[in-house]
Amino acid sequence: MSSSFASILVQVFVPLAFPVVAGILLKRIKGLDTKPLSVVALYLLSPSIIFTTLLDAQVSAEDIGITVSFSFINLLTMWGVSVLLGRLLKLGDSEKSGLTLVASFTNCVNYGLPLVLLAFGQAGLHKAAVYIVLQIIIVNTIGVFFAARSHFSVKKAGLAVLKLPALYVAALAGLLRLSGTTLPESFATGVDLLAAAYSPVVLVILGAQMASRASGEWEPRLQKAFQAGLALRLAIAPLLSWLTLTLLGADRLLLGVLLVLASMPTAVNAVILAEQFNASPKFVSRCILWTTVASFVVLPVLILFAGTNA
Image 1 (spheres, rainbow, N blue to C red):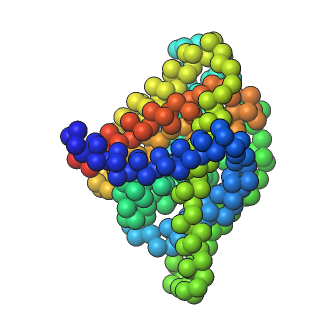
Image 2 (tube, rainbow, N blue to C red):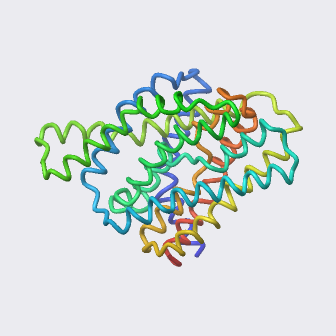
């Protein structure tokens, strides 16, 4: 088992670490501004990889049904556990909102897609496509509600979703598949080039963001919330995800892919929502950093588990 664990680290996480470390160094040495890169990733590279993946994905109706069911069951269970923990620990309102964000939203796009591709191959990426699109929608709708609680704006959430190009390219890919239309080879090659740039660019962004999160003052009063956030992301989320997927009857590959995606570190978008709606952004930011660091140990174990016990 130890040799298998080492093999996963070498084959999957060492390649991922190169652009992440490069991002950390660029941030530390050159003060890399990730905002322009984030715009490129969000509006160009992410839609490209989602488009090509959905267009070529070999996903059955049963897999789609299981993925959709799992997405919402997992969201509700993680929300429920975070609310319960917040009450038991007597956290403040902003920390409760922050804990919900930490528990419910994972970095399954920026970190998850490259990881799935390396760990499960193209077939795994096909299985991940529907889940990824659903998560993009959920984080920009329900995520706003979780962050804002009593003062959320339905209009704002709706507009945030409508501004995401990934949704439109997903719809376009669906229409092309239904109509049986084939893209011209030159056009398909161009989109493939953009899609290929997705993984290294977003991993550089992730590294730079980790370097940013490592700085800043820490408030001791947030320690209970921080520990609860780590427990939710690193232990409770994988356990509940495995149980749910087993009960839903997911096949070996689908179970492995969704288990890993649902157990990813806290989404970077969570701190954006936390800052916007005062949901304890310092606590959320710290959780993003340390769940990402811990993921280099936790996720290889889950990949190994999925491969031997799914």
